[in-house]
Image (cartoon, rainbow, N blue to C red; front, side, top):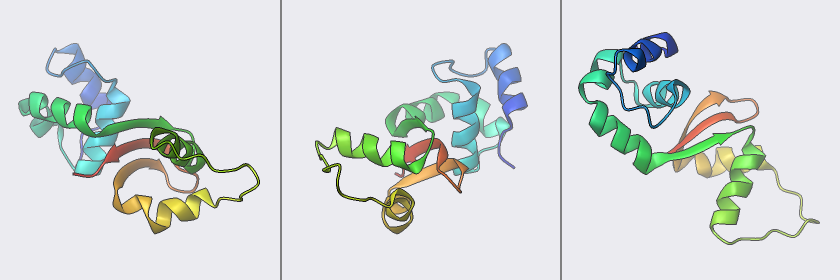
Length: 114
């Protein structure tokens, strides 16, 4: 079972975790990687580095994530082109990124797969 938000908050309060990222990011990371609280606190430096290397951010929907990715790659899509952002996620991006959040609209945390 992956670490819960409450367990992570307690670990924060006890000084057992790096506080660079909020508990919600750790919770999402643990859910994606299936890490329990014992592993998280024991290997906290390793996991903090993995988050640093792979965390893309929190996005409210698939559209925001896809547009962020395109902006970072310098790709500009003309406004008159219709984009199915959810289909873009399901067809391709799902293979490059891990996601923890609401599948129906893409509201959640995104991590690069390694």
